[in-house]
Image 1 (cartoon, rainbow, N blue to C red):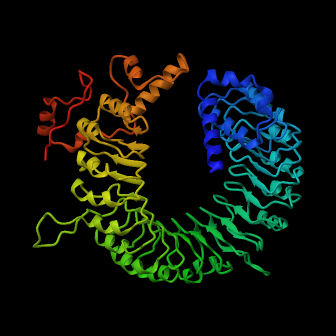
Image 2 (cartoon, rainbow, N blue to C red):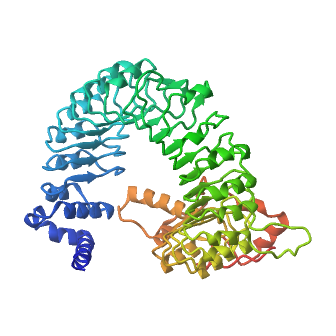
Length: 593
């Protein structure tokens, strides 16, 4: 109880300290007190300031004796001035500058010679070149380094051989040659090596045997087609490679835990996996591969994650999945030839399955009753299938029960994707009983305001997508979102006006709306802020500042008028509804069914 009180007190203090620039100015003068803050509290305060855009370079100085980790990834304004203050951090262990596009070689100079720094991430800092690597060479304590997609060349990679303590090295997207890789033999502590997109050849991979602790290797998008035996390896990624054989040779084979062959082409299916020990394999990705046979699956008794999407898997091979179903937790059959019949065969054999994807398959509503017998399901993707929400039986009445009722038995269901299916409003009502549902995705031109009504009672809903639907201003205005809702995606709902969306946001400020109108306003805000004050204008003020004339339309906007006949469009023209209401209020669209 005392710890809970202390945590609540700390949280309130943090919120107060990060409330505004004025509050920051009050406590920053107490430098001596801040220097004595425990590291974890200083870390939390720093991240809160960063998140609220209250952190600026000179303010970093008050943290230089207490903060051990700095995460600035994606912050495009971070430059040499920021790095000048960061260089004074005495106990800094971790520095993340990934996607900070203003970071260049000279910006790295202040961290030269730091004695505690162990991890540096410069991923996608494209202005960092071989000269920047020379600055890093002086940091002998470095253990983890990420420099993927930077401007470093093969010569710069060779310089890394002096960093003898490296255990993690990400060189993804760099032009690493066989010669450059050979120069890294001195890095005997290396456990993680990422070489995707490099110029490594089969001959160059022989040097990998010189890394006795290597457990992770990424060779995706390379010309490597065969690998020597690497006994210590646990995770291998050879996505989009042409594969001849793996681990051919004498000695103990690696006990792989994770194997990724997504998009790979196998020249000889019979021999491709012949030398791979799969008895402890828990993760296998064979999506988009050329495999036609899956006879190797029964040997993988501990497999938990299986992705065979966009492959030749069909109902005739479901028995192979059934043989390993007892341990499966994640199964992706999207884009395969599996039908409702195959799902029926599988249903009783996957007691631990939590994630199931059947996107872009031919399954229909019959499959829902089978899916309902998978007790542990949390995430289901049924997008782009033949699900309609009902089964038409000749001789029965048209008003029949919704097939989605079957999902009510899934007590753990948290996420459901029904995008690009034929489910209409009247068949969605069973979802209101799925009390654990947090994420729901719908995208259908037949959905109306009634959809929002059915979903308003879901107690844990956080993300709701109702895209390309015929929602009206009145429907949005009367929608009472669950208290937990944080994101409402209404992209493509063309009848909604800016005024209606503004009104909803004022009534429910905790909800973030995604819609073409919002995208237009955000674009304008960025334009205004680059020429005027950096303060963020409101939705209403942006509308007031909009220039007269034709409004810009998002490239993602779909003209929903295509769904209506000429007569229906003419009828709409003389209704009270318009995309720009003259009185600042929205009105509903007449029912045209």
